[in-house]
Each structure stands twice: as C-alpha cells, then as structure tokens.
Image 1 (cartoon, rainbow, N blue to C red):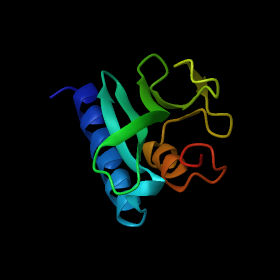
Image 2 (cartoon, rainbow, N blue to C red):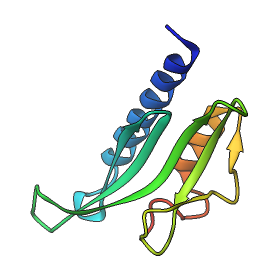
Image 3 (cartoon, rainbow, N blue to C red):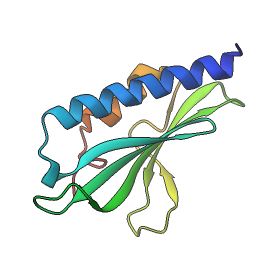
Image 4 (cartoon, rainbow, N blue to C red):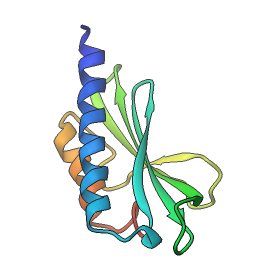
Length: 117
C-alpha cells in the first residue's frame, strides 16, 4: 500500500468520525454533516432538510481537506461565500503537516465559518 493511499484512508476515517459525532448532537433540521471522497482528500458537506423530512432539500460544501504532495502538507480550504464552487485557502490554518490540527479546525470550527449558516 502506498503512502498516498494510507494518507487517504486516514483522512477518510477522521472525516467519518467528525461527521458521526456532529450528527449525534445536532437535530436534522439544523443540518447534517457528511463528506465526499476526492482523489487527494475529502470535502465536508452540510446537508439541509425540510422539517419532518428525510429528503435533503439542498447541500453546501463547506470545507475541503486535501493532501498536497508537492509540499507534503495538508491544505484546508473553505467554500467561497458566493456559492460559485470555488475554494479559498482557510485563512487561519491554510496548511499543516499535522492532519489532526486540520481536522480539529473543521470539527470545532472556532471561527464559525464551516458549519454555521
């Protein structure tokens, strides 16, 4: 197994744990956390539901964690506020060689950028 696939497995398992923990304490009408796998990381998603509905009304991609092989670092991006689909470097921790620090930033969201509406 290559180093890259080990890193991918690591970021996916942490994303899954973050989403499970967030979803335990948040009612569905406030949005549920999920993630999509990308070739070099994950994209975190906030799914929005109508009241008393099991069907998703819409979703927002809120954060992207991506392995930068050229720099051997994890990059953290936030969604552009204009919903254009563009990603901007997260200004408070744009890059780190410590995946735990990056994932903690997404999970705890100390600046209320990722999970707040």
